[in-house]
Length: 139
Image (tube, rainbow, N blue to C red):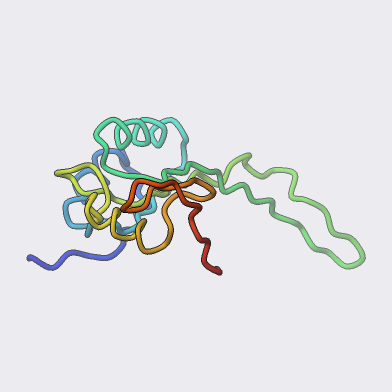
């Protein structure tokens, strides 16, 4: 029960907000989730709920529009009696529920910035207090 999953994929006919919020505790921090639902409005509600509670980052809501084609000998054309939408997908990455951020705390981020030169193009002060250009490393 201590072991958490590394991703969640939800495709449900029920209310996606309740479904995902009940499953999120079983998802490890900094891991992705995907929710498919036929209508956009419930996913928009879920999107705002995840933002307000600071449960996820990199949230994206997109549609899955698809066109069916009828293929007959010597002629091909789009199916004229198709529905307009194939559904919508909400994706994101779970944040730490306690801190509302990724597992990398501020001390770790400072170490990474120090090692890789910090902000691009900015000058930093060295130990003597003089400003110096940050050396960029190859990518």
